[in-house]
Structures are given as C-alpha cells and as structure tokens.
Amino acid sequence: MYRKLLLATTIAALTLSGCGSRQYFTPERTYNASTSTMGDSIIHYSRDGATLASGNVLTKHHMVKLKLEKGFHFINNAKNVAITADSQGNCNIVAAKGTVASAKFPNALVAGSIIGKYLVYVLQNNNFGVYDFESKSIVYNNKSEKAYAIDTRIANPLHIDNLAVIPTLDGKLVVLDLSTLKVSKEMYISTEKSLNNVIFLGRLKNTLIGATPNKVLSISSKGKKELNKAVSEVVIDKDAVFVFAKDGKIMQLNDELSVNSEKKFKFAHFSVATVYNDKIYSLDKQGYLIVSNKSFSKHKVYKVPEVEGYAFVSNGKIYYDGTIIKLNTLSYE
Image (cartoon, rainbow, N blue to C red; front, side, top):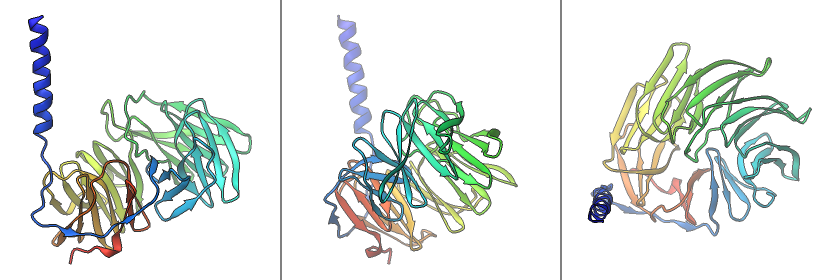
C-alpha cells in the first residue's frame, strides 16, 4: 500500500513540476490593439477553412454564407463550390443554390480537392483515393499506415498538371497520375508515430513545399531539402517560405529552405500566423500579437485577448474565441 501511495505521490509531483516549469513569452513592451466582437464562434477548423456556429464559413479570402446541412463542416473550396462533410462519411458539394452533388465514403472525409470530374480525398482512417462524379463511384482507393493522433490542420490534395499530390495522415506525400490512376511516387516528410499528418502543402514557383508538425520538406528538380524543426505554421508569400517554429523562432527561407532571415521570440507559442501586405503577423497563445517586417529588423508586440480555442486568418483578419483583429490597423512602425 505504501509503495502504491509513494508511486502516486511521485507521479503527481512530476506532473505539477512539469506544469510549473513551462515558460512563456514575456515581451518587454506591448501596445494596445483594438478588437471587435465576432458574434459567432468557430466550431470546426481545417487547413483551408473554418466552420462557424452560424453555418457560415471562413475561407482564406472571405466569409461565405453556405447552406450547410446539420452536422456538416467545410473541408475545401473549388470554383464556385465547397466540399463539405460530416462525421459519418457523407460528403456534399455545395454551391450558392445548395447541394449540387453528394458522395458516401466508408469513413469520414477529412481532406479533399475537386480536380475536373474527380474528388481526390483522404479519409479519417488514412484511406485515400479518387471519387468520380460522373460514374458516382470510387475509381481508385489505397491505404496508408494507421494514424493514432492527428493535427487538425490537415492539408488538402494539390493539383499539378495531370498529377494529384495527396498528403496522408502519417506524414507521406503520394503522387498520383490522374490519367492512369497509378501512383508515380511516394515520399515521407517525417515518420513520427503520432501528430505526423501533413499540415501544409503548397508550391513556390516550381518547388513543392510540404510540412508536418515535425519537419518541412522542399522538392524540386534540384532534389529534396529538409528542415528538421518542430513547426507551428508555414506560409508561402511571393518568393519565400515563412516557418513559425514551436520554439518561438520565425524564419524566412528560400525554396531550398536556406535561411534568408530569422528571429527568435523566446518561449512564444504561436496559435496562428500569416504574411499580409508585406508584414508578418504571429499570434502567441497568451494573446501577444507580434507584427514585424520580413527581415525582422523591426517589430511591435500588441496585447489582445488570450487564445483559448481555434484561430483562423481570413482576408486580413484574425478570428478566434468570438474576437476579430483587423491586421491592416497594426504595424511594426
């Protein structure tokens, strides 16, 4: 009995000391930032959009009023339509007039992109494949390793020429030839056992940039380059890749992931970040919004409400916990 009590006491002491030892970003000076009330809340969050309690959707560029069926949330958008899904494997393609097409999958759809007549998808069980809207059937399906825990910022498949680059939940990129429905290449970004799904997938000119929470990968005709860094966020802006690391460092990289400039904000834990109008905005979870230029030679820190839930950037505004911050009202000058 004594040994069990001692073990329990030791575990409790270690837990408390671990919590107490966490350190936080403490800027020397802060400025006040005006915010407005959202009158709504984010109930589902993904790489390319956030679903609000009202049924409206935030995309990267604007707020959209969609007629979402009960239990459905936004996944991705294409030309004049949005991909929506529920937790039961149902998928609706929604336009301004309502649902224009539907599909049913054996598991919940967590990522998808419309490419011509196809929906290239990733399911919750890490199955991935192609659904044909003309034949109303799955014409290609494959399965990757089981993912035990995932980051909610799940990247959607990317269309390049006649190829689809499919980001899996276990840190892999699958290149599928859409003309033959055959895999032409597979490559892992990282191989961690949990929280290793692809959270970012994009292009910088002719270079493919992918990231998991553990690593950033660059792929081009010059070969592969890796950045072994725990990642909070990745943004491509013009000719640069911006990486917001979990240790508080922000880096501006070129297409080969070489550092152009960087700055560390000690103990900052970024909830969301973006590059807007040639300024870098990064929101620490405690409610410190860092605004800097791209070379990090100038910056200001603004105090805003602490982040408790999801945060999303849309059309020059940060939305979180019922709060809206207009980025064009803030500067590093």
